[in-house]
Amino acid sequence: MIPLCAPENAKLPTALALGSFDGLHLGHKKVIKAISQESLGVPTVVSFWPHPREVLFGESRLRLDLPSEKTSLLEPLGIEQLVLVPFNKTLASKNAETFVDEILVKTLQAKHIAVGENFRFGRNREGDIYTLKKIGESLGIKISTIPILEDNNGRISSSRIRKALNDGDLEHAKYLLKRPYTFRGTVEKGRGLGKKIGWPTANLKIDGRKFLPSLGVYAAWASIANKNERFSAVMNMGPQPTIDPNSLSAVEVHLLEKEINLIGEELIIEPVHRIRLQKKFESIEALSEQISLDAKLAKEILETTSKSN
Image 1 (cartoon, one colour):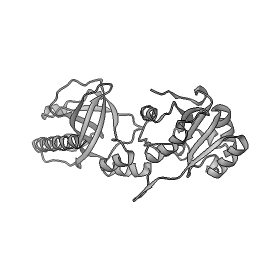
Image 2 (cartoon, one colour):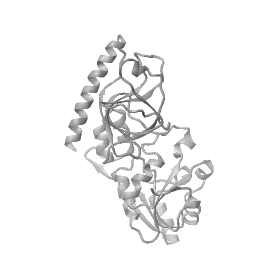
Image 3 (tube, helix red, strand yellow):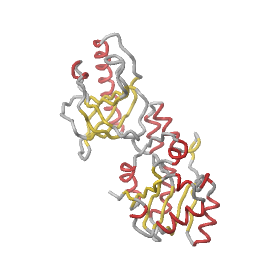
Image 4 (spheres, rainbow, N blue to C red):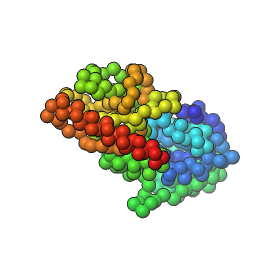
């Protein structure tokens, strides 16, 4: 696993790709490719943490990929380190030239910088790619600017991935990501309500900074972290309107045709298809019957998906 580090701990000098790279889609990969085989410095991805809009405007910015997940995605691309620059109001107040000089040149010793053509930086987003090229020329730093990648529906973007997940469209999210969307969670002991109605579930504790798909019932693959075996599953994402209308939103996973004690294990979940939206049933019996239908459909969907892959 490549290291995740602060700027002062980075291996130097660097050839760096600068940006959020949330979702690490094909457009991001084109920026990263520009420096991934560079001999001028250590191939490095540099991002801000937390997201600038969280600091400046108090917005909640959930991530498609948490930093710990991103390192495993970057390594196959030829990147040797992921550097997170702590973003605060002091950094936000620096003008474009000062940011480049203090962070990218003095701290990271950048010899090559690659960005997307819509990249902005510095106080009030005053710097753009032309600013960066001018600064780079004055300092002898190689600058690469990569055109925005588009398909028939427009720009490939993290926003489109988020919309697909909000719509429960896992297939489109997979197309944009060029990989299955996944998330992780640690199995915690629940109240045993699912077991009481014949459908025991693993209750997942998930990092609150992770972007999750919309509420609903999904066919999903589940695997235990660091193990090769995966299991077919039906997943409920949301509250429990029939059993406990006052319950908080949760992620519950029922393994199909398998019973394992998963308490304390970390599960990797790959939602494949949203079967239905959540609804309140007239009785526990009616809910149990619907879960049976959900499980049957989930099994069929996953079997079909497995064959097509």
